[in-house]
Image (cartoon, rainbow, N blue to C red; front, side, top):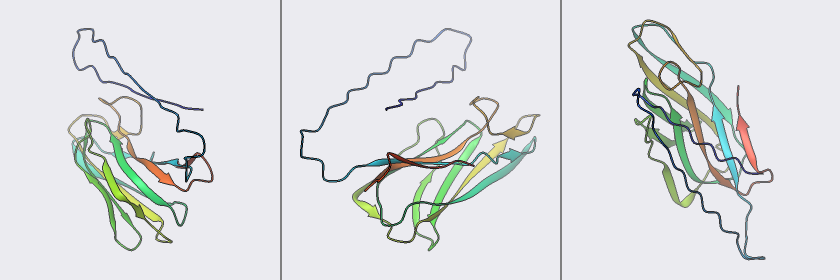
Length: 162
């Protein structure tokens, strides 16, 4: 299976039309050396009081002896920063953009060995009158997600959800 998820925040009253194009090419038979998978690390424990700044931190043990090809964040409009490090303190991702996050591309891939406990922290600035919590709305909720591609992957994906 394949899931391709795109969503947009229309900050105006005018209708917008979005267009997404995806091109997938199959590798010639016998050329794949390693199966890749998707890392999905999600922190739903977000709670920032009205008119205040706050953070949400989570730690996840990802599979050992993998190589990460890329990582990218997903946050909403109140987010100001995300930082992710391994247990040994190795910085694996840092970003400040909620709407156009810059992925970290690792060339060569980032080999983690057994240093596979990843802790990521998202920082928020809640200037509104209601608390911020995890949710779908980029305007009224927040997210703190780190995702990426890795190999070798015995399973198609690895998720750290709660």
